[in-house]
Image (tube, rainbow, N blue to C red; front, side, top):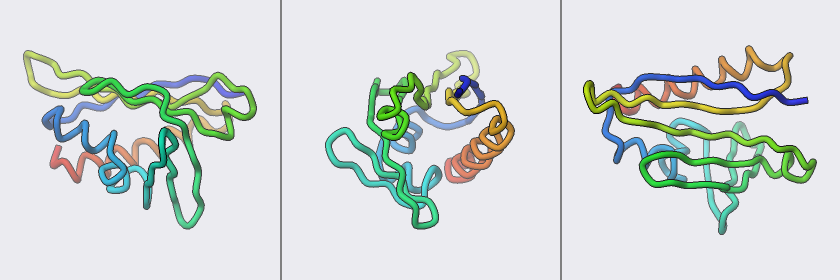
Length: 127
């Protein structure tokens, strides 16, 4: 059974730039996957020659994007992964929040993978 977990990162960037990095295939392929393509509401993510596909569930401009892996959808799982963000009006820092699901034994690996990917995103943004 997959369990929900959340991670939060602080970034110094503009919401407009961040929106492009989390919602466009070009932006996502710079930090999240080796390559990303989209057909209708299905995003195809490629890592080391392996392609995983996810359906876009929600995209609220300047707020959040949520996907479900097609494999989880076919299995009837109520899981997803979401990237959302909010700008702190006082500091102008952006709080990036990741919501994802994994099995208990995969939790540490999943957290490390997100840390690595968000680290790549931070380097790209200069944040």
